[in-house]
Length: 367
Image (cartoon, rainbow, N blue to C red; front, side, top):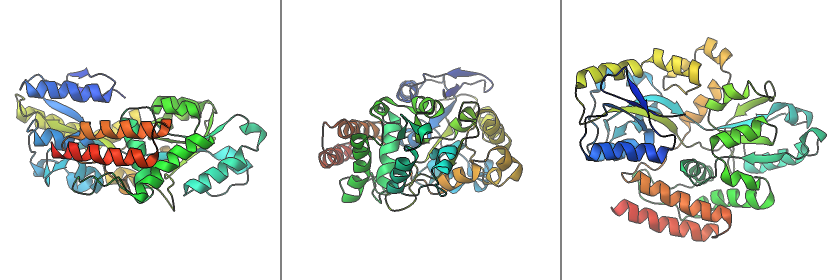
């Protein structure tokens, strides 16, 4: 999904590049020149701290937005040092898509809550004639932000971490190694197909929809598209599995913030109220499968009937772990991608990659 840059007129918008790193860089370049060309910024939630710390966005009045009606994890992503600098427009949580028809035919009644159970389920399914040539599992493993997400989920789902709550690096641990080892070993033993090293969200979606995968980690946006594909009526979603029990998603989503260099800020705040309202969130859910930040929409039985994944998505978001909330997030994410990719490709051992990543994250935190 392309991110929108909301301009001064509020009703006007301009598409930014599809690549998230290019989006961030374009907005930073605008802020560094103190240009008023951008008014309301659509930020990946992990950018909030960086933009607030550099004073590129304004602190917001808490009494003008219904933050108390939103899911707590989404609200926390919009804060810097305890103060609100953005407003959640959409949240996101990772889901495990799976082929209900194949699991049922293989005699599997419960969805996997652990990585070992998922692999065992795959072994049973792959014995079916209908599963000939299928691979077990995939996520997003190309060297981009999606790899940061998937690596963090693996580490967190093995009781590890990338950083502690204060942003201090804590990735060179036995727990994080177990998470990275799951990914590395899965590429080695064929659980994850070799071509998945090139997968972003869309490549994984297409592979699942074309019948190449039994399980897939992806975001909720995919649900409505899969319902229009050859696997329609043959799939469902469940929480991500982990090492010893249910895993933890990386928390996703987008916040909107007010540029410090904008004109007509009062008008911009009015637009932000409209754009982040519950009615708008409901529209975004219906039109684009965007995860709403509002609690009430997950409990609306009419919506649950229309979007059966909502209860699983709510659980995913509430149990999600934020990606490292550090000021130099871009540098931290690049380091994660570099080292995780090296381990997945076999260029480094998991232990070496995590040791090098710990050193790189310390450098980033010291800047």
